[in-house]
Length: 278
Image (cartoon, rainbow, N blue to C red; front, side, top):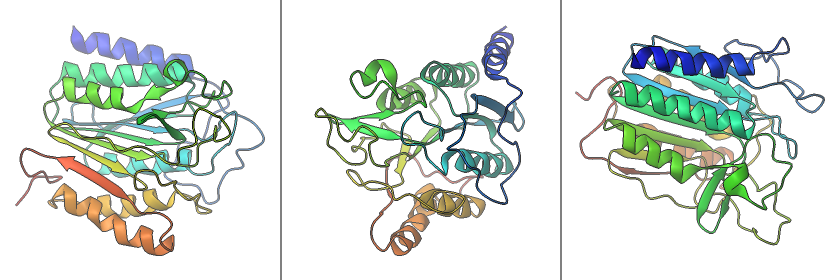
């Protein structure tokens, strides 16, 4: 019965986001799309074996009402393919408004609670802002400013708490989101980047940049951090997860000439390796 209900929730989410005007569903683009002319509707794609005990929600928001971004949808497409090849069942969601973003998180929560998984991973690429030590992930309908982010955005700490509550296995939370605040002119918020989050036990949190540091915009197909994360994950089999994320640090720092320094924090009860530790 739980599986039927989960399928029904996912079907509702997918059907609510379908449109004939969709972003391409392929492994990569030969050149970057022009995202400044029109806004595509939300898109939900599921890939991999639903029986896999590694599940991921991958979100890429590019087409913002204000301060559109070049890389996130491309990031999400490439991350999905990499995770599927690693044995994940992935729900990829792109260009989400606030309601659809909340729906996607709730469906992910339901899928984790229905079956105890070994690994739950949430990846977000898009705009993120911090206010008073709280990190908010922005949907594309960000034209309301930061007057009430609790109502108009998704609180990262709440998503992390949800993952911990419903999954006793390994939880991984990756944020390619500490870009300059598109509401920087607001009197309420003049902070750069994202704030530090203390991970609960059994969790690794990874940021594309250090706390309080903004991610540099990439002119390439993917974000600088995601480019090197993809490379690290393709060779991650049987490596300790801390070592996988450590591999990203030096290349990003070097290529950004010290302007961007990836950061992660883990609170693990036992060693964790993709595919098992040897």
